[in-house]
Image (tube, rainbow, N blue to C red; front, side, top):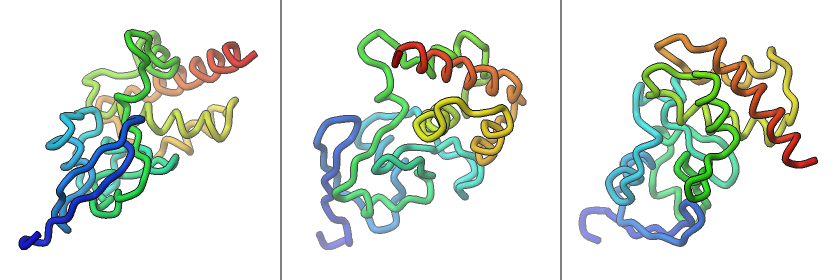
Length: 162
């Protein structure tokens, strides 16, 4: 393409997709514009707040810093992939049941980081939770409720795997 755009192909939330992207576009711009996915959001645009967290090939990634052309051939999951039909993921349920949000702007990023945390450490301590989620910022200061929600989600996951 004359303007430097190129077509990328990747797996998004379980389905094969493609998008025409410019070299400078970040992943969140493409997810929003081409796929109407609004869970991950750009807030600081510097990879410091965690609002834009998505999973790229199984690794939590700042979507605001991830250039869209590099998504070619990857598997990307967003917070929208977690619910199955009307059934929320246990992490999403735990955040709701424990009021682990106020405005909700940062919540998708916290949920995606919690998912990676619980995949790596199924029964984390409160200190491990705080450390793992330290790259995510909540301007409403719902941190105690977030830690409680993560512990609740860990218990639920352990129960459903047993």
